[in-house]
Image (tube, rainbow, N blue to C red; front, side, top):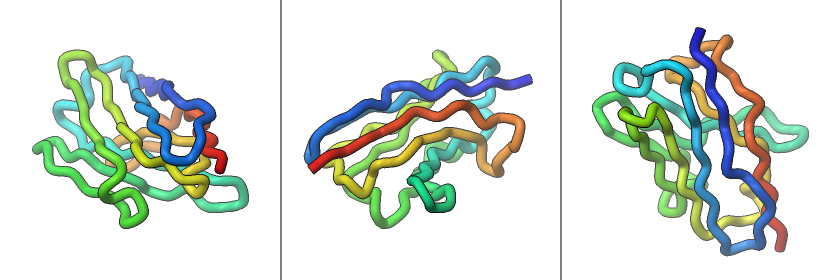
Length: 115
């Protein structure tokens, strides 16, 4: 069974940057679309970015221009580079395939942005 492990979160001040990583136990990135999600306290999980198997990308409006999604199929790892972070970005960030597989959810990685 595929396992996904998110890492790279932390506490930063507004305007700072973080790079999140999504490591997979199986080679799925070359054949599946990969998405980054986030869930803030009291809110539903939100889709932030997608990188399709073709390499095409998509971003939610709030992330566009600040976040960059990428993947390294050889390393079986996905990334989310987050620049110019805002307090509103504070959330637990998760990765998964698109369409979502309920069995793939990891523990997530916490991003806290202070002003």
